[in-house]
Length: 339
Ligand code: SF4
Image (cartoon, rainbow, N blue to C red):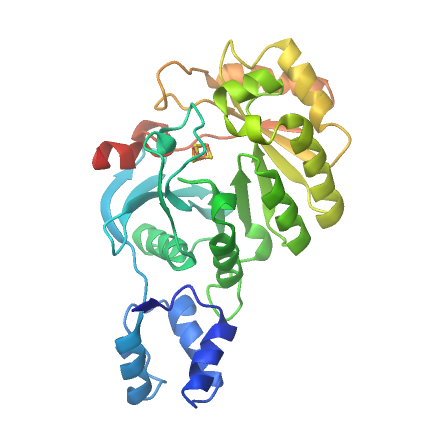
């Protein structure tokens, strides 16, 4: 059985044309899948019964089942969602002034090996399909009881290690005949896979690209993010500049403050040197205390580092951290349940 939820409208048209059925049915089907978000072909009442019948015998509609749910005192909700093969990922719903934001996982596990991250401890199991990532957004919307206004691809997995399915996810999510999310309401966060950053630039999508930097000195970055050995900072920063030139979009840098490790004056100076001179913004984040035990930072320490950056002319803010009381370190809930 094939998954129908990951198909573009154009691919649905091809399916109908092979069956000698009118192509407008592709739009109707797409609306049912991603606009009205029904879970059964039998509910698609404007499609003929014979069409619904062959669709149901050949295709599946992807759904995510919530097997654990946590709610933080600040309203953030974290869901452990399970797919048809029993694999599960975490999805987080966060309520901001501008609406509901959902943090979507792109892979089951991750092979990038960042030392501060719980998601990578058992490596990569598999990548998610676009249909499964869409199912995360739809499940979060249903569970939280609100439409989703923005999506951050910052959950479990490295989105650019699953490039094609993530692009499908973005295109389908932002299609006006489907969920209709605004193009600019999606943020993709990467640890810095340079060839895929350049591939993304060439597509000129309107999403926001966010780079997890976490250290400005090469050796320091390599010690917490092994990806730096393969795609070093000295190549990553020029690639970011190029991305901004090609797309005209500002880049965000994520910088998790680990007190005593990457928040000194020299770190601020080096970071300012890297990100100056092109449209960029630095999000400073205090390392989540639910992560690995040896990494610590308070909000105050993060604020103090952001001030050091601002004093050097860098556009920097401290991100509001939500869900601290529900072990919000990415990958923690899945690890606790799976192991
Ligand atoms: S931080 Fe992101 S890229 Fe790094 S190991 Fe964790 S999930 Fe993978």
